[in-house]
Length: 78
Figure 1: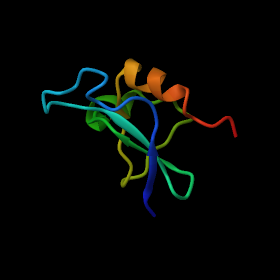
Figure 2: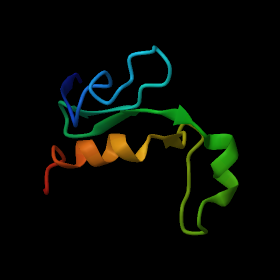
Figure 3: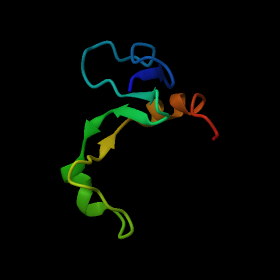
């Protein structure tokens, strides 16, 4: 598996040049997506709706609204 492309603008275009949190979204060669974000699992896990589940190896990752909105134009419809 490899990273095929970034979705949306690079962090420095979004104003993240400080080396602090720089969320990012990538499409992988198998069609999956990888997200760099802030791990908020402990804070949000108990707030998940009853029909949502998280495996022990999964994390709840938060990215900024701006990151996802800029990635939207690059997310395939199908």
